Image (cartoon, rainbow, N blue to C red; front, top):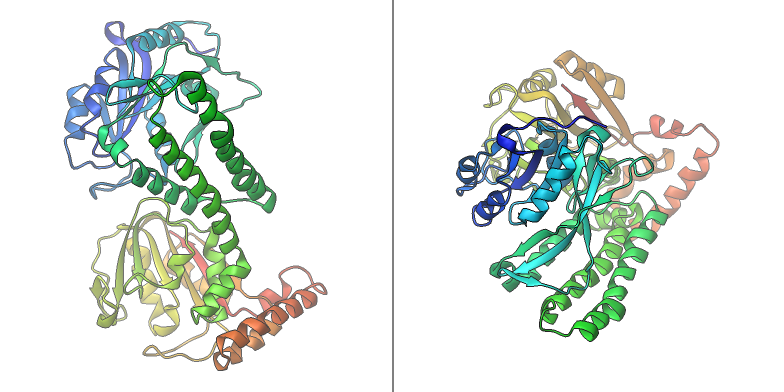
Length: 498
């Protein structure tokens, strides 16, 4: 057990972490309820209202959610990552986290004081019951009651946050059993949130569906099908009838809001299933073929499904930011994309010829640079790649692709085809510290197909492709895994880290 830490002026020796973004309306009440805590750390997304000033007025320490000066940076699809940063900034072992529009009762604060001041607390992590207030009126009965959330933890047990949209605290559950507070955690729903409850939940459902990932078909069946269907049916067949039958409507959550929650779970259930089905590789290949994308680009894009990018991003040749790689890359976290292109008709942010002009950006400006299907069109690749390395931050990454077994395609020129070994030398000589290169390939049958696919109507391509995949699969059984992919790459996808 960790020893209790001292705190100034008999304050509660515990850090409270709060995430904010333009939270000026609810933040004063939140901070007022925390006035007895020794430390408050507000992790802000560069708010443009009075959030930061209010936080400092109450003595809170303010840190940035992201290392950027751009205003109004949302963390809604990176909640766990930002919570981690907030918790890492704490000075005390005991850590309590909450949202900017919620409050803590005096009874809860004193209960927390007793726990964190105890040399031998009953537990190292605590959950607490929750209750909802709408326009300061307590909702005494709600379909999810009794509801509990873990909010208090001792950081010495090495806890971590998990979840992109709805974060939760994870820890060694076999070693540490959660204790339970008697006092409530208070959720406050504003009139505006209630009035726009469906648009509010619809946005959340969109974010959840967008970020949904499943490691296997079994995982999908359990989390997307079984768990979501169980939640939905539980609401409709048990929770709502039991609540209103037992307590009536007077002090209960309004039926109109409960039905919106049912609609939210219904939407999640249906659209998560659709998301899974439409993001399987066969479905993606059909989609890209119908969009008239060749197999070199399609197979390269499938590799990008697992690549996550964020922060300041420069796309060389990205034009209007509608290129196909945007449909595959994980761009969940905050990001801002700038484009450079030689063609003014593509409407890039900067029109320039990189072969003859240096990039008009300071050293270490970008977290990622994209260079998809562009290097083959550049004669002086060494100069351009060197410039890319210069404008990347330390630890930044060049992400891109280059075709190999494809036809000549001037745009306006087509100079080269490069092997993986050549690419690695190019990037290492430019100053990149590590390079990963992956072939976009299936085998010799796909390589042959790619030479004539431009002659085929889309429906013919879709009819022939299953045969091509099957033949390459059967041939691949005769050699070690990856043998034919290395021999017959249609393109290469590369990641080069500075």
